[in-house]
Image (tube, rainbow over all chains, first blue to last red):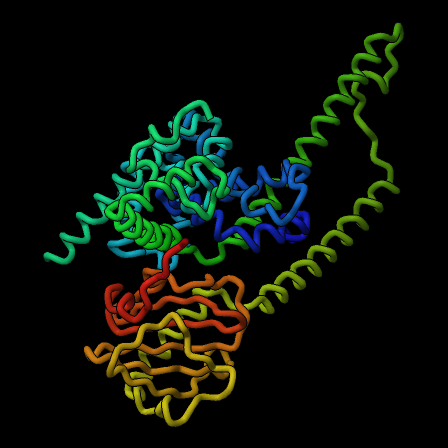
Length: 173
Length: 291
C-alpha cells in the first residue's frame, strides 16, 4: 500500500495543505499539470527537509516558501514549462474534473498574471496568498524594500488595468 | 531604514502598505496614516484599492481543484520515497562492493570467494525465499484490502458533494419554491441561513428537506425580485476542505447551473443558481474590507 510508506506527518500535511499549495502553484505556473507537478515537488522537498519544520503551526507558510522557491529555481533554470511524455498528459487530462474550466474570469486573471514577469508574480502572490507585508517579502526574497514596492505596485497596477478593461468589455458586449 | 519614507510615492505607499500586517511603529505605516489623514482624496482612493485587494484576493484563491489530488500526491510520494530508499541502499551496496574489491586487491592470494564467485543457493535459502514471497503476497493482499476499505470510508470530496447537489438542484426544479415559507415556518434547528447570501427587498425564501449524500439536508429556495433563482443547500457536516468564505466565482458550472461552496462553523453551504457566474455573484453579499 503506497500511502502507508509516507511518514504520518507528511501524510497529514498533504491532506491538510495540498489544495492550498496547489492553488498557489497554479497561480505561479498557470497550468493545472505544472501546478500538480510543482505541488508534488514541494511535498517531496518537504519529506527531505521535514527536520526544518520546528513548529507545525507554521507548516502552511513553510510549504508556501518551498513552493515559491521550487518555482523560482525552475524558472531560473529556464524550465518554466515541463515537457512530459504524452502518456502522462493523457492520464492527467482524464483526471480533470469538469470544474477545471474555470470560466472567462478565471482565465482572465490567469492571463493577466502570466503577462507579469516571474519576479513580479512571486511578489504579488506573496502579498495575496501569504499575506506577507512588504518587509517580509523583502526579507524572504533578499531584495531591497524599494524593489519590493516598485515590483508590487507595478504588478497590481498592471493586473488592475487588465481586469478593469476586461470587465468593461464584458459589460459592453 | 536607509531611505526617507517621505520619498515614497503615494501609489507605492497605498498599494504596498497594509497597516494590519505591519507594526504600528513601522515608519511606512505611520507615513501612510499621516498622508491619509491630511489628504481626503487619498483616503477615498485607499478605500477603492482596498476593495480591489479583496476582489483580487478572492479571484486568486478561486482556483479549480482537481479531484483526487491528495491521493495522487501521496501515492507518488510513496513511490519517490521508495526510490530514494532503494537508491540509498544501492549506494551502500555499491560502496560495500568497492570496499570488498579493494580488500581483495590488497590480498596476495586471491581465493575463489574473493573473485566475485557465483553463489550457490542452498535448499534452506530456497525455502526461506518461498516463505518470504508467500508472506509478502499475504501482507500485500491485506494492505490492499485495508486501503480499499479506507478509500471507501473516506469522507466525500467537495466536488463529489457539489456534483450531487447540482444534480438534485436541476432534477427538483419543479419543486423549487414549493416548500415551507421561511418567515412563517422556520426550518429545523441547526439549518441556519448563511450570512453570506445576499437578499434584496422583495426576495422570497422557502425551504424544503432534501437528501444529499444519503444525509438529510435543507435547501433554501431563493427567488430574487429580478426573478433569478437559486437554492442554498445546508449540510450539517464538518467539511474542512470547504473554504471558510464563499468563492467569488462558482467552482462548478453545468450548462444551466453555477455552484459554489463554503463552510460556516460546523455547517457546509452550497449555493446553486440558475445561470452563469454573474447571476451567482448577485446572490452573494459584497465582501467586507480587509482592514
